[in-house]
Structures are given as C-alpha cells and as structure tokens.
Length: 450
Image (tube, rainbow, N blue to C red; front, side, top):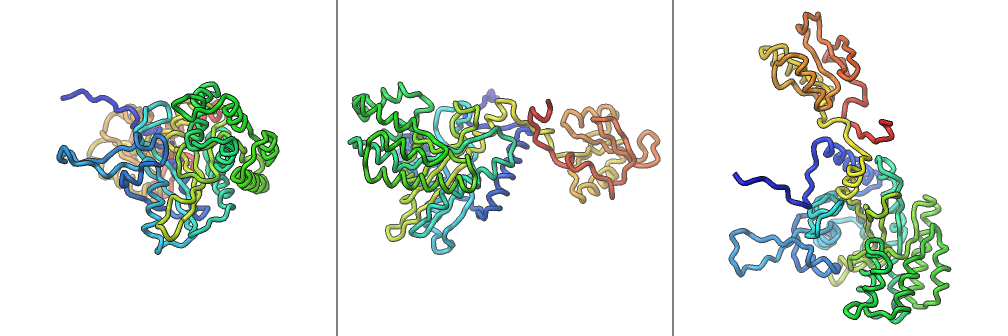
C-alpha cells in the first residue's frame, strides 16, 4: 500500500473544528435569510473561456476539468469556478425570465484556485456570498446595504473587532487617467498588493520598464492617493489637495461620499474609506470592499466584493450587481491558528447511554430513541465495558452526560450523571433534558475560559 500524504491547500478539519465551521455557516445563512436573500447553488464547472480574463491571475489559477480517458489531443473546455460571482452572473442570464428583480441571492459553496497554499489561502475553500442584481439599473443604496448585512452576521460570531474598508474603482481610475497613465488596469493590480508587499516594492513595480513604467513623481502621486483614509467624507478634500482632475475621478468621489454619508447615518464607524483598496478582479466597476480583523491586518481581507455593471449582459439587457463574499475557510483558519475559537466537544452527542451488558442494548436503544424524540442528541455506548471505561469514552469526546439504566449498580430507576461535576440524579427519558447550553456543542473562546 502506498503511503498516504496530505495534499496542501485542501483543508480537512477535525470534528471539533468542523463544529465551529458549521456554526459559522449556520449563523451566516440565517442572517442572510433574515435580510431577504434567497439561496441558490450553481454547478462546479464553467466554460474556461468565461472564467478567463477576469483578472491578472485568473488564467493560471483555473483548474481545468478533463476526463482521464480523454485523447491526448482533446482539450478541456471546462474549469472549476474560482469564485461564485462569475457563475452567478451566468445563472442570472440563463434564468432572467424566471427571476424577480432586484434579485437578492446568497450562495454558500466551495471554490477552487490553483495558487500557492499558505495560511488562509487554499486551493479549495468555502465562500459565502450575497449579491443584489438589477434589471438594467441598480440604485446605489444597495452598496450601503451589503456591508450592513455583513456587519450583522459578524456581530453574531465570536470574531475579533473588524473594519470594512471601501473605495470606488472610479477614484483611482480617474486619478490615474488625470496623471496621464494609460495602463490603468496594471496599476490597479499593483496597488492592490500594497498591504502585502509594501510601498517600496510597489514603487519598483510601478516604475519598472517591463511594467507600467511610470516616472518616479507619478508613482509618488499614485502612492499618495493610496495613503488616504477616513471614516467620513473628508477623503474628498484630501484627494482634491493632490491637484489631479478628471471627470471619472469626480464621479467616483461623489459616489463614495454618498455611501460614506449614508453608512454613517445607519452604522457610524462601520465603513472606512480607504483609497488603496482596488480588488484584483477586472469585473469590478465601482464600489469595492475589503474587510480586515483588527489586530490581524497582515493576514489580509477575510470578506471582500464590489459593484459590477457589465459582468452579466446578453447584448440587449445588462444586469448590474453588487456583491460581497465572506471567505469562510480563510476566516476560521485564522481563528483556529490564533487559538481564538474552539468547539466545546468533538461530537454533537449530549448523552451516552451506558450498557450494563449486551443483552440490554435493545432497552438502551429505546431510551436513546425517547431522548432523541425530544431533540436531545444521543448515542449508545459501543460496548458493555466497565462503567469507568464507558465514562472515559464519553469524556474523551466531550459528551457531558452518561445515562444508566435502572439495573445499574442496583439502582431502583434510571439515572443520569454529569461527568463534569460528578452529580448523578434520577431521570426519566420521557421528561429529563440537559441544560439548554449542553444540548448542542458550543463555541468557546479564550475569554470565556480565562
């Protein structure tokens, strides 16, 4: 037998961590539905032609799908989707006649990217997206609403404080055009790496002859714009002070100021106007978002998205949209690595029904069924070992209660033992229930245990 080795970039969580992940997914799903988003699921594959040309790294990150038995000269025309926005845009085009606009959808699925694995960056990972798509037009107020939804979801999860950074792609695009820069897309992609590689490396890339080849002064202006940040609309005057003018820049400043003013009315301090945010995917045309955990800024964004006006178009009608995506795998991986969260147990089981002997397994199964019928997760002991061994089995898995039948130790009736405190009390499977906090696994944080 060949030796089994892990494949990097494809996370597989242990049961206790999977409980945390499922809790996050449940909270996110419930929050999205509270805000009126309908669930959809799209296929895992899309034509490679549609997936390509969505950004600098899109082509090299796409996993092609090909039959093992395919002929040597048979090319693959399908690829695994690298995000959920591109397949959603296709879904909208195919089903436009059956959808009611503006269409609010959420989607929680796996995506695949062929990039170099590192902490929080995987080849396969879970995303949770919300998007609102219009028929021909889409009011800007939805660009304010989406970060409010994300903030609502995050407020219910055990995560550190966070900030949602927002920009409008028209601001850097108009600013660059005002500086006379022609290759705007390349400059945007380089500036988008500012937090990862720092200003010196960004300057090198901007001035490189095989890159945008900007002058040193022009590169300084690009970085000056990227340094601007504010929690209100004061960024407008800071940009104006740089002395660059362009019509597209004016439009972007006006749009972002409207969003910041509206957001501060509903949730003061939630959004930060950060003019270095660009997003690397080419389909974004307006507002863009990134979300960082405060104190973990070097980790990068754990939730991002933006406005796209042309991604979904059939030639007659364009369906503009705005969306934001939580990198669920990326988020919880950081929490695990920093010891910020853990599951209270490695199984949903709250009660282990002990066995006096194998002849009583049928009775034990009836007891378990009665408890399950009232919503209590139960399992029967795997074998009729000594009670001490059965209690250790429960303890290793974090199961808080062990149930003993009426014949155990000569007892006159069934009893249940809280193996954490040692308290053992009479119990009837038709009426007994554990404390509410013990029915399901909980999510623990260091603060709770300190």
